Length: 186
Image 1 (cartoon, rainbow, N blue to C red):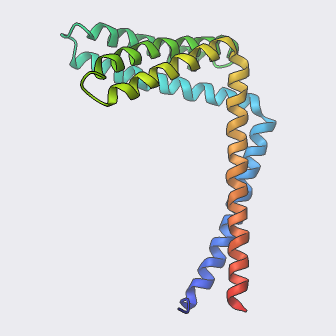
Image 2: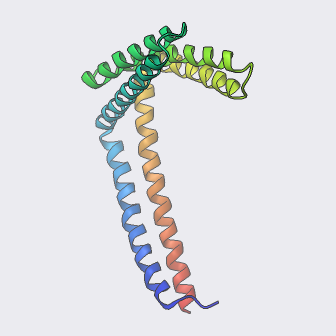
Image 3: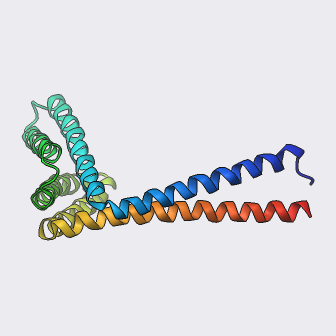
């Protein structure tokens, strides 16, 4: 089947955009490696925002279930999330202390996930996955609390290398598209 005439022009434009966007992603990844301290601060702020969103969700859950005996744990978790979120947003440069606080926060979060998973597993297959997730959070929290600066720096490097990989993949796809266009025109 012969391709439509406008397909080649569209493919060439796509290839050019892939080169441009891929190159920009690679550049962004390299800049993230060079300015890793700033990227780490940004990641800390993102975790802070996540904690505040988690707090808002926790307060809403607590409010809707406030008459249930288990609601106190929801309120405690929401207050903890609020405190950690505010600390992470107000003091993002104290990365070691923040790493320890994030680790403790994840450990405390893991307890509620393990408890929920334990209760749910009796009547729902979701219980086992929540139980496993809780254990994972517990292990991650302990690891972060023990190695705070290593973990935060590693997250920064993983993000930067991911950007470089994404950009490289886009450039590779653009190159392959160019070869296909040349082959088709022959």
